[in-house]
Image 1 (cartoon, rainbow, N blue to C red):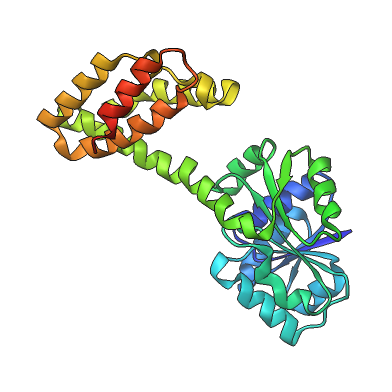
Image 2: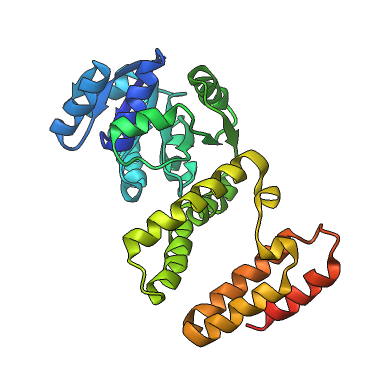
Length: 286
């Protein structure tokens, strides 16, 4: 099956090269800027198309790897102004948007999907390395979804399927574990700032903790990876934390209690129910 790309940014170029390296027939790229199409085509030893219709005529599977904001616009333009084959497959790679963005193409007899790699694309070279261990999400029409699933299996990638309705929840989860993790670490570093510790040194100090925790989560899961005073039921230590925050950083106390209360929930399977109840009472007072 011949594969073409509309859009030659980091995602399109990286994934096209990844497919080519896994022996898929990537014919080339079309882009608003021909120079971008040339860059993508060079990666896969394919064609930089000046005419979009030529790519549509040649490829059976087309990835739309433009910016999220224009995916629907591109699909609508194709459905209105270009010839497509019945049964042709169109896929976008947005994490936030569902296959519904391509609905105008479905009305023309195409099959529509979203395929999302759960990773960030800082640059093409690092993305190519990361893609080998990336988990993908597949969503879209039931018919022919096996083509994308087979693609993932041939590339050696794990994947899961979701429905269109769950795409928003899926992207929210990615935002929490990626973007909000950064916010959480920045919150923790504020404690060091108050203590007068330089940010660079503080990051170096906490990095082994962060790295070790992430590895433990991967190996054991969140509940078994949890350590610290709440896991031990050490009420006295949490009280001291709260008193210290009340004295030195009252503006940080609210989030500490919210996070602490949620952490207590992870320990509810422990035998020390008295400590759990006491911690919940202390941390509930937000």
